[in-house]
Image (cartoon, rainbow, N blue to C red; front, side, top):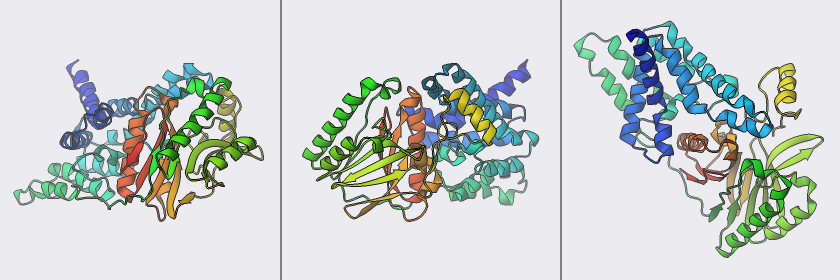
Length: 402
């Protein structure tokens, strides 16, 4: 009995240490020293805990990080799937960390953990191992993860006193000595955070007050002398290209201020999740490049895609994507566009990117830790790439991320 208690408790301790930074951020209790100690402890536990504790740790991490994913199924009319999806993510991350089960040598587990930092099960990339250090004294680059894992695993190998300080030297090499300097945009940008519940957002009753609210926010932003006003993803709950009158009104309203707003677009029977830019009467459209696995597309073979779409998404087909990222140029300043999940994907940061405008609808997962996890991931990519992110969200998460 004591053995099972030890196995389970060590697995849970590993999972809690690995996940603590998210919950500390959620409750505004982030502390860099505490995050550093918890992050190092979680990796050390992964390297040294008994192999039977590994599945407990992996399953628990899947739940602690992603219990909220099934919430969105309520709005598809299959709310009974919510606990099933939550359990599935526990199993996925049990399997994700399972390679560590097959060895008890710390240095081999270190190699496996580093390899797992590149793994994205079903194209889902929200578990980044380096993310645990995003608000800590340890850096988030790959070489810093290597140094950290080496420092934690070497004590099992080093027997000679001559090398006893090597782990400490490696750990110092993993410290965050600063990230690439991020620039401030010369433009005055207003980020609108809306609070529209998901079960109300797409109803007929919501359309008129939503549009009225948007134009009121534009008018206020003009009075406050903003250069740009940014609204969340799909703030217009409609196919914009089928509403020419609304487009003309937005073109008129954009005289003197650039308006960035999310909507949908339909073309040749294909649906796109898009961002519209209205600037001085001109229109630009940015289609989404990276879709959400199991949310906007099914990362499975065609026969499985059809079955899942028919069973859980009322027969709706996957969204279509753009061929490359889209940049908006506003008053001479270039912004990369990112719609929700894209802002947490490496693809969107490729090329010459200094400023990024991100839009999200986080009401799909309210209430949960999803907005803070998304923000931490955006901090991670902003720091790695020297990018300033301007994020407008529905429900929670709006703000400037550096």
